[in-house]
Length: 454
Image 1 (tube, rainbow, N blue to C red):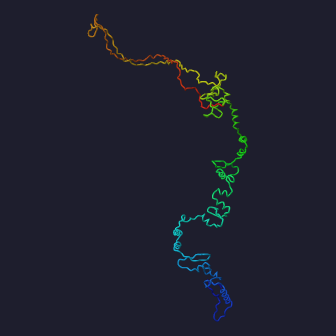
Image 2: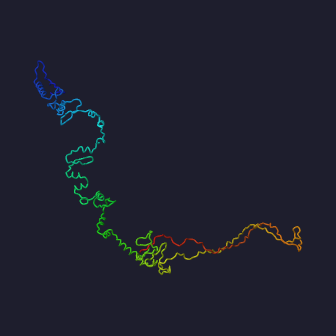
Image 3: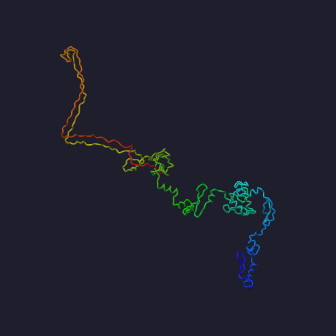
């Protein structure tokens, strides 16, 4: 019969009653239960361990397993200010715990402990660093070298005898000697241009070119560019480009535009192969082709080594008459002054009679008021009486006197002319119109540079 809560209870019907017969079945079951219970692990509640082995019993009871370390500690002899510590695996001894040691271990946190130790992170001790932590986790041995495999991640590699012989060199010269290298013989000397090229990323059909001093970039090399670059001569390149050479162009230009040709150029300087047609004296040798054409038509220059160009500055060019008769008598290349064909503008208005309609004219006015004058009168000194000459006698003194000059006066007049029909004839004399215009006769024009082919 199982235990309930660790307590055994006898099966029902196993207890006997006085004066009755004990039943064998329940009795035997009871005996079997007692036997099984005696052989089974007794529960802790029944005073057992609930286990069938010492190890399991200690576990069930929560007892400390046997420990060499605890055995070592239990053997220690301690006293005041002592601190146990290990000297080997599971082996403890005692050391003295000083006052300073106690002041350190009773600190509440790392900050207080650093203060007790007088340590400032980053000043007295190294601050935590992931790279240093990675290095601290490495396992090293003889002839090892640490290197990074990622950010702040280090690993260990074997440092060979040759590697040590290289890294203990004092300078680059010694290192090159160890490596058996001579710059310019075994290896390329450093060059910024080559360094720039080394940094380029290339692919099919690419071409490098410079963008600045010792600075290279990559451009696409087209199929046409390759056909040009593989030409073996400038002649082949011109064929690829379908262009003429300079000499060919010059030949074509010379044959198509003969020396002496005059053009007007829309620039203030003459184009290649031309001179300004400005009357200048130029060399007969240097410009032999032009001299052979125009000679001294426009001037003999110095008479021996030079000749003159035509001077077309400010001129209108006129076709040579060449026996036509429109500009008779002209010598080829001669200049002609400006001229206005003779003519006269005459104004001769006809005499015209006014209308003969019957009409009259009224008039009025006054004469000038000026009218003062005097009269001279002859006299003798005898015979005057009261200002009147009476009986002048001979023999007396004679003379003259003037009458007074007072007499300014005016006369007014007015009236109307006859209303008879009559005409008034107006005749304006012949006269010429006034002069107008500038200093020359010219059409509208644009000033361009006259040039002559040499």
